[in-house]
Length: 458
Ligand SMILES: Cc1ncc(COP(=O)(O)O)c(C=O)c1O
Image (tube, rainbow, N blue to C red; front, side, top):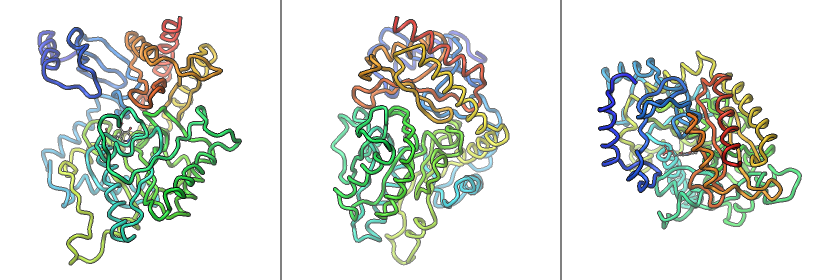
């Protein structure tokens, strides 16, 4: 690792242990073992404080670094932009903000407007606020409720946790605000209805909730195109067509949360584009600038935008929202270069090809390991659900799932698993390598899982 002595690094680890509160972590073990500190990254690989090399099969842990580590061209684009103009509040425009918005909506037919903020949670909260304000302005206060789906996740703020379909993420942080209503998940492997056309049936379950609540109370439905942390769930055939139909029937705005799937992860620019649906809102964050700068986008239609553009003498009628750092120019500058890389390097096609290889390898592993109950996903976004018994589908004990993850880590391959998500169902291994993955990278990932399963399952 360039630029650091071992003395520097051990001081960093001690400072981290003494002062940093890590995300989503119990800190008691750090009294006896070192917290993990990642020092450097290049391409698909990262090096930790001990100098150990790892192949990163989860793009920065949480499916973010889509174009891989060490991209000088993104760093240069950000540097040049910061020297020219680093920040002005988002009530004004910026050069990269305008350019990226234009480039982005070119890839999203039917959508025209981009609202900038900094995180996936924030981008989703913007939609919830827009839906609430539309209810006040256009529906006499009705249509204020927002539907969300069991197993989906939309963020960590109190507002977005109110739409958490993952009980363990929401537990102990309530009470939550009113008006957020859950609909059933659509994971056929854990089926809730014994029917032929599961996709349509699962979508019909949304209509049942709408009728129970009253269609005139519901303003929007938020869904992940492929559920991420709730178990990597690609909806069954027939689901999306029916969802779109239901939303149109009851005049419910469709909000697709592309925070994970957006910007190439599934092999299309956006996950929803696999399914031919037309959303009213699309939110995105992680892959937009691959973690080189903080940026999120709430993208919507001209029809939604027009609902906020009216009498200029009414001081309360426009979208009265601000995100201070939504005015940072580093985000759109990085996002523009990130998008250029995906285009020039053909990374969507690579994602489709490498995703097929990953899925093929996982199916081969399934033949060898009865513990792999189901594999699923789209593009370079795959999950493998581990079960104690294939016949009963009893989930594998979480400690053993984590042991598989730890074994891969010991082999120098970082994989993920659903974590503090759905009680009793934190049993899905998660894979989301960068879109630059090669066949060798993919094989190294699945070889590591193969070896780990042999060791952990005996
Ligand atoms: C689908 C989805 N939406 C929203 C979020 C929240 O994004 P952030 O952590 O940037 O607030 C996440 C984070 O993992 C996510 O997976």
